Length: 467
Ligand SMILES: *Cc1c(COP(=O)(O)O)cnc(C)c1O
Image 1 (cartoon, rainbow, N blue to C red):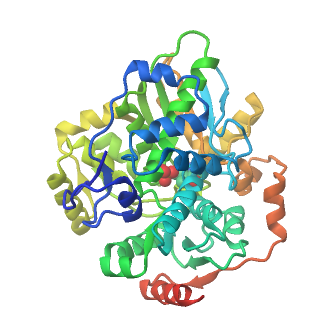
Image 2 (image 1 turned 90 degrees about the horizontal axis):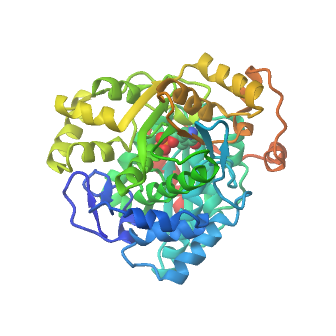
């Protein structure tokens, strides 16, 4: 298995090189040169595997034989040993038509841990093997930063800098990032919103001289390895739901709280590999650019809105290009020209005959603030299940988009304790897990900067030159 760019201007590269490249050097996103097709027999053989065993089976199709089996196995074991649930991503049955896939049992209580704890191990592996300095640089709407920092804090050969929008992440998210004391961690708190942070990161990665002389590495979902790690739980949850389901489980819907389109793209990949998936339900909040795309084929970012689900407060979805590539039949020239047009005109209009395909792949619903809070209250009252606001968007979209008799696995992407601001508004008094309660007593470290690229560069220079 090798990796190519959605814009077609780089040659085939291996798995470790794709991991280290992050954003493709031609400005596109890396994708596997072909999507493995799994037989029914393979899927049957996977039904009873544990989570870590399943990771190894799926990764075997993608790692190009570049990592010795025993070493990969150690990395996977180390990645998931910090999870509080032995199943890693357990599935809870709510009704016979609705299952919740709990993705928040990792160290920072959100789904980002599943990929980022592994990527932390993987960066450390590459730093040692190749005697490399690695400077991880990323933007976060809150959860990615916390998780990535947790994954590499104190690790030799690695520094990490995370940009987050000042005052636009939840209190717990901010504390998780800024109370880490290790000297290899820098938090930049940016005056602006997430899109501003992400744009600056993309600009630094697009400057190839800057990228290589500063040893930059990406943890955002522009990195294909992150997508790959997330593909695993689509398979795993299907097998678990099948065990709990009354009657035989056929194709299911997955409802995915969406921001950057990374997680739902992992679901798309699972479907293309052969997992029986009916519809992918794309749940958004009021930042509903992707909902509009699925309804009318026009992708046009608009005005940023702050919501109860800040990790989905994104207008420019960096993974959208990967889907565009597949829906346009892997025509990289067309992708490159549409992305060029997007840069100048600020919108992409998909060819009309492709809209039908988009609507066969996805359904979508944008959940507004009141609907989000109502869903939290309703599930607490009816099922004694406390949803976080992101997971609530997923469940609300499930109710809107899943048809009569269809079974949906709805992704619970964060623990409610991370977003107590919204939970309080529902009049619900939750108790915090110990690990989160302890954060409030720790001192914070962060540097406030305005939204200029030159300021980011200045802070990075200081950070990279420090011992
Ligand atoms: C990041 C995040 C999302 C959105 O995931 P994408 O891969 O960016 O679409 C949803 N919910 C939570 C809690 C998140 O942290």
